Amino acid sequence: MLKGSCRGCSSSTVTLKSGIERMLTHYIPEVKSIEQVLDPEEAIAQDEFSKFEKRLAEKEAQKESNPMAQYMSP
Image (cartoon, rainbow, N blue to C red):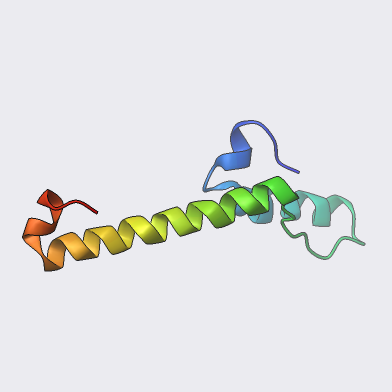
């Protein structure tokens, strides 16, 4: 499991596949591939963040379709 700064970094999946997988498969021939496994808290956080991003995108689309929407209460 990646920890510290790597944990929330958007490049962590690339680091996992490109760097760590390459080293493990080189030194341990039995290892064919690796995959990211999220613990329950990370899975929930990722799901909630996706929902939040979706709501922001919907709100932005609404603003673009109705320029006066930003002055109206939700």
